[in-house]
Length: 156
Image (cartoon, rainbow, N blue to C red; front, side):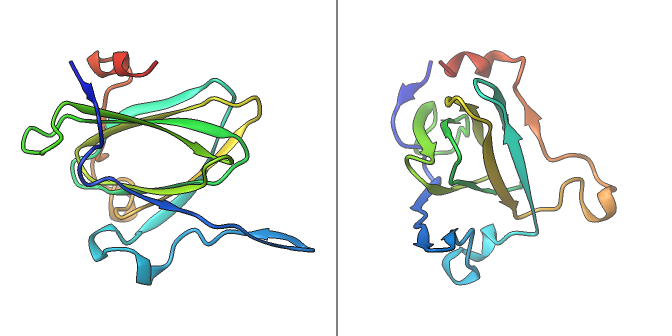
């Protein structure tokens, strides 16, 4: 069973929003603020409908740089199944999104999922440090899927 705590290696950074008479702007990432091993190789944005979850899954080699900036809020679930980690068997749950804008670096091996807990469709930006399916989409997917497995129980 998992215990509540902080998952080793996961990095949270508050994402400030600059507002003026035209609207607002949020910097998604800056090369000078990211460790080299987490620098993006590709990015995408996804829309998740209210009450819908994505994940859980992990990656063997890939780090994810998720940005939760709104609209809406998400419950982000992290749990550490890495046997060599100081936080092995720790689960961490954080509300992120419009009410708590965060950039979150999730290193390889950390199982992660998120659920839209709001009433509106929510956007999530991800800048992964590996290309999906490799160069030219010619390699196996770097996912360890848990959607139907035993890890699903750690999401409430």
